[in-house]
Image 1: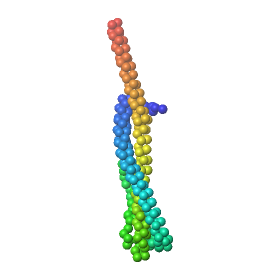
Image 2: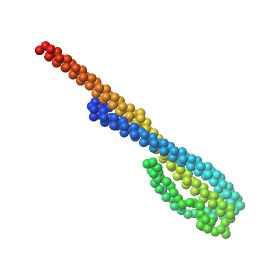
Image 3: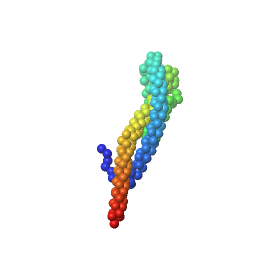
Amino acid sequence: MEEKISPTRMNFLEKKAQIGLASDGVELLKNKRDALVKEFFSVVKDFFSSRELLETATGKAAQSLSLARGLDGKAMLYSASLATTHAQSIEVKRQNIWGIRINKIESKPFSKASLARGYSLLTTSQRIERTAQDFEEVMNLIMKMAVHETMVKKIGEEIKKTTRRVNALEQIVIPSLQNQTKYIESTLEEREREDLLRLKHLKKTKEKGGGKS
């Protein structure tokens, strides 16, 4: 249902200005959406690339673990794992992409030098060392995937939100303003025609009155 509005010249100019602002808003939102879509596909590409690397790294780490367990035994693996237990510092930072605030997870690389893992190289084998390296790489890739997945979801949600705003302006707000403008314009034109007819009628009446005298 159209909003009731007084058909005045001031309201006509106001509605025309609002149409201009709404049209500018549509253009800005479309530019934002296009930029977000471009960013979205870039992040999706990184996400799938990280996932492929993770699948490969996970398979490699599983093979290393299986080999170390079979040749060095569970006891040696368990002893090495206890020595390497440590807390990994993770930091959450805010990243702004086209007005979208995204929580970006950052951590120090899980990869460590051999002497920094905590166990003695004299009591472990090269196979256990390789297993540790492979699983550290798995953890690094998991962290990268977590960042990419968060960005994909956030940017995707913002694209949907921006599209809804564009549709609302194009399909509801602007057509409504245009209808109001047409109504005001036609009403003002009708009044002008009526005023003109009245003036003509008054002129004819005066002319007739002057002729009688």
